[in-house]
Length: 337
Image (cartoon, rainbow, N blue to C red; front, side):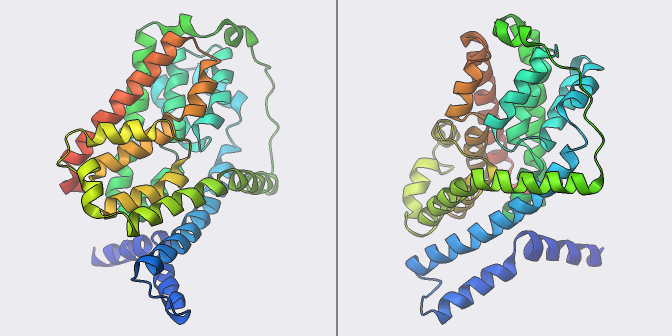
């Protein structure tokens, strides 16, 4: 048992957490005449370390996920989901979201395709909630910052939110509030050709390059904000707004996060900096979930596919769900960290 614990600690600290890179960055800054423990040096160290760590993990994750995703093209996925009904279909759709696009905007075209193919609207919304919220990237990156317990708990409860949210939308009979052009679009029944491993690897590498270009700027902005929070904003200021002594901290974090546009990779460094300043785990995760699931661009895109009433129901369910999750994580933080 001790051997397993030691191996896992090595994986957590050195491979996922890249502790060796953190120490190396400090040494290089010292050699350059910059104190890594000063405000300026600490900001530079945070920026360099987190940027390299996130972009490295990002590239590896995109390659692996894209390789897996090559086995589940949209048409094949639609056929699989179409065989199931009820809660089982919602669960499968939520699980499917873990190996599909990394941001809500890129999930919406798939959501429209599934809806136009005749899948129940509740099932497609389970996918839409899950896809940007609990992909495999969030599992690994959260593990690198907060540890395995937090990462696994986050993914599981995110899947629960996706299943419950989709089921509620289905039970409320929201199907009639999908725009008519989406239902009338139909789908082309073409089975994707089988690919060789080399072709799947080439596809995965293309996805790495494509997504890397899209998220690179957001990662830099997120890390820059995180560096400022980590080294320049006094802890008592952050505690006054987002600390556990403020009963509205979770709600404030959710409201702040919702209008922003980023993905899990851009929000991780901000969450890391806030957590280091003593912000509750649930408050931090609520901010992350709001940014990834309720970004303004994705809501605008979704409005073109659904009518206002369904859009309001979707935003309301997800917002309330995120707030509940935040308060639960704050209450049980002592069990996870």
